[in-house]
Length: 491
Image (cartoon, rainbow, N blue to C red; front, side, top):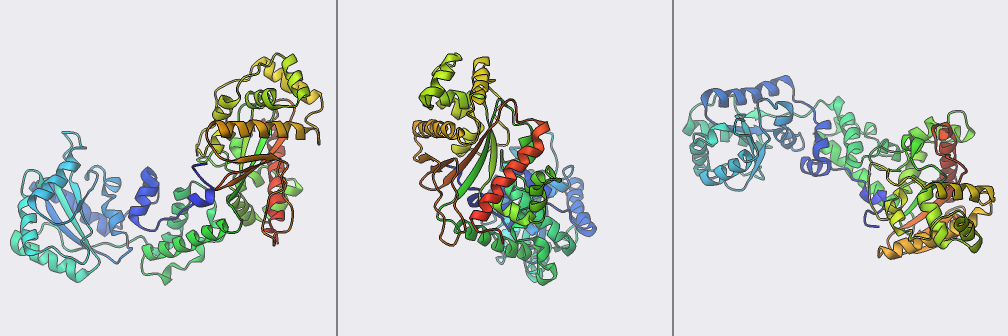
């Protein structure tokens, strides 16, 4: 399983570079616009470039972690009609090197795009521009290429930024904008909201603050900058996920699978996260069961429910007849195979059906946000599935034979795709000695780096429907409570 356990994927970056790489296009959802005076300063830079047809050199300063890089690299987001996407310049300043940097930026713009281009000097904090570099900047900003550039030199020191500004004006003349520019981060009362949004977007999982690291528990006034605030939360959150991973002998996950005539995920989609297919959502599960004892029990333990889901990477999928009947026809007991043969179910290789199924793709380590929608079950498979129910195979006890056959078929699938693992029905899960109870999943898949507990419930008819949404949620919650209790997570 290449993707690994959810806990191995959770991460909270605390610097702009990490946010940019981790969030991609979603980064704009955590950006906060600058205050009015800073907005006016940047718009003045754009206006100066437009009206004088000369580039502008802008030394800017702010405390480390204030958000200088974030703001400088997001000017096109806030003022897209005035600024093109920024480009980073790394290393020494020279006419030719700046020309090359601008060339990279302009290569991605339309020929009629004449917006100002922010050039962000990267990695030179504490190392101000030398006299020759300032002279090179002057020459560059007056070339045909440089006349569209707004060169932003980011500093942590007001004194260094001021000295650079005065030195440049001595050789290039007074700037059309007031220098140096002070950059301030968002107001402190906005920090908890930014942190919570960053936490959710970074992981595509809601309510992660319920795990115990809640940004609202951290006092913004105790930190000099938003970066420092985020760094502390990130450190605590990342340490917490590592601790959770170490609780069990091996990363462990649970899948609650519903085997019926249903092919579509139906209400399961309403009980799971939107960006991680099948990953259960605590609030949705409890919201679907308000009048039940199980729903009320969990509603008083929402933090525990979120924690249980995350610790177990808890998922739910549909097992349609295209998978179950095909698997049973090949790997079932003699009586089951004869019944399916009598209903004209062909004995075909089940591996392709596993590969297309949501559960199969999960076992392959794929993280998707849309379910499999191809492959309607044939009438013989639906009729055969009904006959299995009529013959009593879905009742308590007899379903063990079906689970054992699914385990054999799943083992064949994993072997066919070259994935090492032992697949065993009704095998007790090994847990640390201090845990309170036994866990015997319907199917246990032991792989070298991870283990998966699969719980299958067999239902007659098209059971995964909106009318059964509460029953589906209650069944899932009951399974999660059993695991949480056995693992000693319930106080």
